[in-house]
Length: 302
Ligand SMILES: NC(=O)c1ccc[n+]([C@@H]2O[C@H](COP(=O)([O-])OP(=O)(O)OC[C@H]3O[C@@H](n4cnc5c(N)ncnc54)[C@H](OP(=O)(O)O)[C@@H]3O)[C@@H](O)[C@H]2O)c1
Image 1 (cartoon, rainbow, N blue to C red):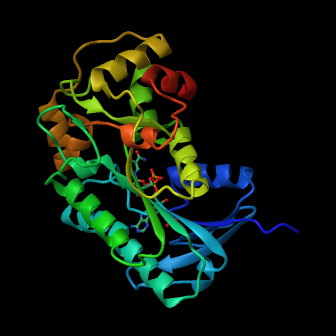
Image 2 (cartoon, rainbow, N blue to C red; image 1 turned 45 degrees about the vertical axis):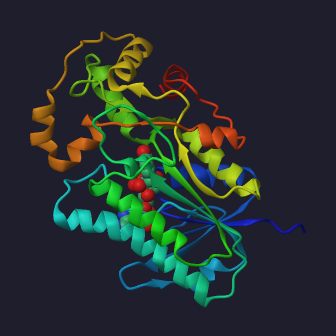
């Protein structure tokens, strides 16, 4: 029998983890998960780690050629209390350091780690200049998280290739930002969030999954890449496109930024601020986005 290539996924119970598991199984890969709890999923072997205690079942690494590292406490849910901020940081950095140590301490055949990061790396910017991978990091909380997350990945195991995807806002009908944006439009009408001028560098979930598979299949690919659709849009443009697709009115004023800030605290930056990010580097490397415009993505998702 032909030996299948094995991929270990962390944070596999999440939005991207669920979708990439399905795609990898469809493509004939052997899939393993490591997470906070053991789960029962057909055709997937599930292992447990405890990041705080620095423990991971070593069998998780057996026969693994590629690791897709997605683990991280959600930044979109729950108010950013000091406790929550600590969890957001430590779930990413702690899990990466735990992987590093497990790889150093156990025999393995891992060739490449493909890790999520986020365009939050670039921080909140006053101007909507187009940012690329060489642009400096921001200074706010999410930027600090992304810097530490990426640094922890590159710190050890130099012989293993690493690909970091700085993900934009992932659009999926099954979770994340998109269903939250769609619901009020379906019920009533579309409005901008805050000024509506903030740029949303988005990416369709299928393109995220395809880019992960592409990184597995493309043996030469390594380094840091922005993973955002070629055409970022303003929040107002996105809401207008949603209104049009759902045949609902667009009302050009919505909840004021101040009200959102009072309701959400520091976390309000996620919806009120945006950055325009270029994905030219990954396109130059040969990756082709299936969903290039917000119209195409929305058409597919609603
Ligand atoms: N979705 C987006 O728009 C977006 C944008 C930029 C970056 N990203 C990054 O991409 C990664 C995957 O995104 P996603 O949308 O799939 O995230 P998600 O749905 O929130 O799933 C993340 C997974 O991480 C694990 N996790 C949650 N809390 C944890 C904790 N306290 N400690 C350790 N592990 C924890 C969970 O897996 P287990 O239950 O299996 O442990 C969870 O299913 C995340 O790191 C996220 O920051 C996502």
